[in-house]
Image: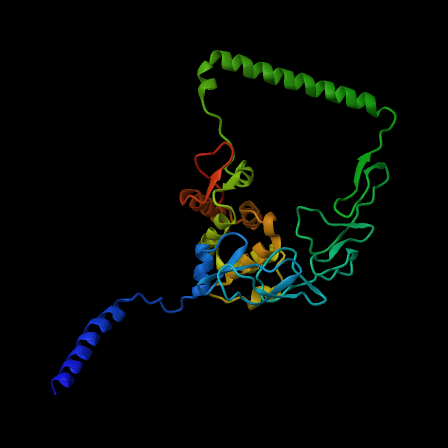
Length: 331
C-alpha cells in the first residue's frame, strides 16, 4: 500500500517538473523554414551545405544531389546530370540546370556538356554588346557614302565608321583646331587670372556627381569571411529589394523563368541567389549583384546593402573609401 502511494507521488513530481520545462523550450515561429534559416546563417564551412543538423559535402560539377549525407561532413548521394542539363561547379542542387538553346539569330560555338552550358554567339552580320542584356542580336552597321570602316563588326561589337577626308578638308580642320586651341588658351588664362585675384577659391573642396564612383566602390568590396560573407548578405537583398523588380533582377542573372516561378515565395530571394551562387562558384561576387541592381536603377537599394554589409562586419573596402553614398532614388 505504501509502495503504491510512493509511486504515484513520484509520477506527480516528475510531471510537475517536466511539463513546465517542456513548455519553456523555444519553438520556431510559424512559417519558419529551418532549412532557409540554416542557409541565412551560413552555418556550414565553404564547400558544405546544411541538411537537418548536419553539414554535407557538395556534389561535384556535372552532378546533382539525390539525397543528403547521413553523417556530418559526409558525402551526398549524387547523380550525373542527364543529357540536356549541366552544373558547372560543385553544388547541392536537387536538379541540374537546363542547357541554353541558341536563338535563331545565334550560332552554337560550344555544345552543352554535363559540366558546361551551351556557348552561343550572334551570327555573322549581327552583334550583341557585352555590357547589355543580349535579348536579341542587332544588325551590324553599314558605312554610308563618304565614310570608311575603321573597325569591323564582331559578335560582341558593332562596326565603326569615320568620314572620308576630302581635298581641302585638312586645311579647314587645321583652322578649326587652331581656333579651338586659341579659345581654350584664353579660357585657361582667364581662370588663372581669376584665381590669382581670388586665392581662397583654391581651398574649396571639389564636388563630384553623386554616382561618379559608386560602381568603382562596389568592386573594391572585400569579403571578410569568404563565401560565408556573401551568403550572409542575401538577407539584405531579401529585406531591401522591391518585389516588383524580383523577376527583372533574377532574369539579369540569367536565371530561367521556370526557376524563378518555381521558387518558394517566402524564400524566393534566398533560393534563387543560392542557385546563382552554386552556378557561379568562385566567380560569384557581391559587386556583380550590386551592378545588376544599379543597371535596373535600384541605386538606393544597392547603397543600403553596401552600408549593411560593411556595418555588420561582412565586407570592407579594399581601396579608398568614401564617406557616404548619394545615389539617385529607386524608380
